[in-house]
Image 1 (cartoon, rainbow, N blue to C red):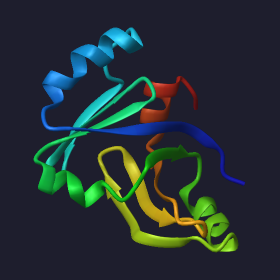
Image 2: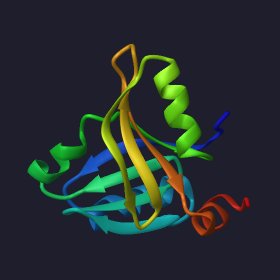
Image 3: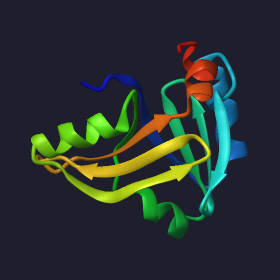
Length: 127
């Protein structure tokens, strides 16, 4: 059985640098990670994943309501299938690890990510 390691609420922004100061103040620290991916900039800060960029580019990712970091993407895929979920974006790789998008039987769509071991240690302090 896969374990959920972290869940991020998604925030949509035009400008990441203008968005982060308030979140730094609210969360009490800076981003755990920040990177660019396919035309958007992302920053994970506290329990938020900020997705910033032009509205048309951000719209490619707006179908998912959250980003969920899991311990084992392969096991998660089996669990999704067993519960009638549909993988809407097949597994792919990014700088943070492997990910996919899935629509649950009830209609919710979520991005699931299996981080690299180094990132799990860096952000969560776990092995």
